[in-house]
Image (cartoon, rainbow, N blue to C red; front, side, top):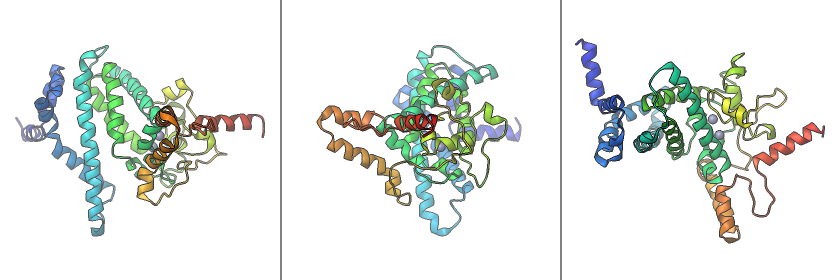
Length: 331
Ligand SMILES: [Zn+2]
Ligand SMILES: [Zn+2]
C-alpha cells in the first residue's frame, strides 16, 4: 500500500467513516436504531463536522478581525450544533425507513437522475410546508428576512430549520428507495447549488444564466422566491430542477418590469437579531393568545401565514391572485 493509501486509511479511521462504509456495503442500516450503534456511527463525525465548519467560516471571511473572535465561535458553534442535530436526524431516519424502501437503487448515473427527481420532490414538500404552515414559517422566515441578496443569505437560518428540513427530505427519499450513498452525493450537489443561487446582483447582475434559465433553477428564479412583490410571493420552491414547480403551478420567471424587492411583508427591524430570529414566533404567539377558542388557536399554528379567524385573510395566495386578476383586467 502506498503512502496515500495509508494516509487515506488513517483519515477514514480517524473520522470513523469506515463504520459508514461497512454499512453502505451491507445495506443494513438497523445499527442506527440501537443507541450504541447510533453513537458509534455518529460520534466520530464530530471532529470532521467541526473541521468543515471552521474551514467554511474561514472561507466566508468571518475570522478577519480579532474583534470578531467571539462571533466567530458563536457562528461555528451554531452551525456545528445545527449540522450535528441534522446529521443525527438523517442517520436516524435512514435507520428507521431503509427497510420500507419501495425499490432498491444503486450508485449509478441512471439512479442519480431518479434520485435527484425524488430529492427535488422531497425538497419541494419541505419548502412548500415551510411557507404554508405558520409554525414552520416561524423556522423558515429567518432565511427570508434579509432585504439584500448575497451569498451570506445562504447562512441566514434558524438553527432548527436544517434538522426539520432533513427529516422530511431524508424520510421521503429513503422511502422512495434513494440509497444513502446516493442521497449524500445529491445532498452535496444540492448544498453547493443551493448556496450559489443566492449570488446577489453585485456578483451576477443578470441571474438568468442565459439558456440555462429555461432548463434549470437559476439565481434569477431564487431571487423571485426571496421577493415580496405580490407577483412573486410563494413561488419557485425547488432548488436545482424546477420540474415540481412546473407540475404544481408555483413556477414564476423574473419579469424585467418587476425588479425583486427582497424581504418579508411584515413590518420588521432587519437590524435586530431578535426580530429576525424570533419575530415570527412572537407574532404567532400574539395571534394564538388573542384567538377565541381552542380550534382557532390550533388553526393559527397550522394554517398559512396571513390566515385570520375573523375571515379577513391576507395569505400570499390571496395577495398574488388579487394582483393577477387586477393586472388581467387592466386596473
Ligand atoms: Zn423559502
Ligand atoms: Zn434562499
